[in-house]
Image (cartoon, rainbow, N blue to C red):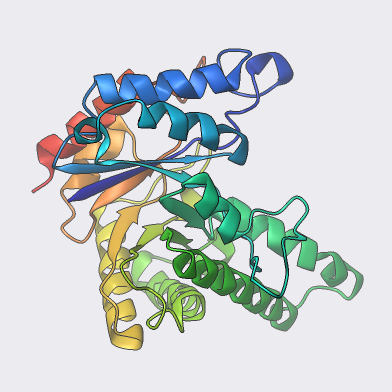
Length: 312
């Protein structure tokens, strides 16, 4: 089954306040998104699992709206959170002193099916916090490596907490421009492999005993290619990386995982992404990238239809 994840970032902030939600009431907007998705049969397509990843404030409204439809219309429509905290509520231990954080128990109680963990924006934020001391001591490769290892340790805890709570995980991994380095693709390959293997092993170690019926999907994010004016990787690059991810997780951890393209699935690249046998879907953020940037369900359906038309 193909899997499409939609990361609606801060769509709880309306345009009147500088955000991207097209109306002033984001709750009404997410209700319409869920209704439109079901009306366009995006929740009942046997060839597709669609998952909306939402800010915490929009999850209850999305859940309540989905629940008003019969299960046969929503069976392939998931709703998830944008992250999980690295500590969790536990009976007889921490009752929930996690101000500003979303522990796995809270996400599960909200009804979340999925959580996105390790997104490049999350990793960047953690590295910036840990990097505050780096500036004072003049950053060296060794210090950066230790900071990255600390971030990977937190991401590992987040993955484990999500799985223990019964939440499926979309784990994002990927290399930055600095990590990829200079040179041609063949020269870059060993550095790319080193970064991805380090992230995968660190983030997924120890989950075999807690994965249960939950699923882990890897979202490959080429961080160097994300953003306006950036050139995305081509078919050969994505094919190489996705195959490496699957093989590494199998060989190092004994796990079979699906891989989706996390660098931004859109109509322009849907045909190419769909043709890569080691890719099983993608991560969508927006449906309009120029002019009035934003997201709409008909645009999402256009991406999905094009992807499915070329997937085998």
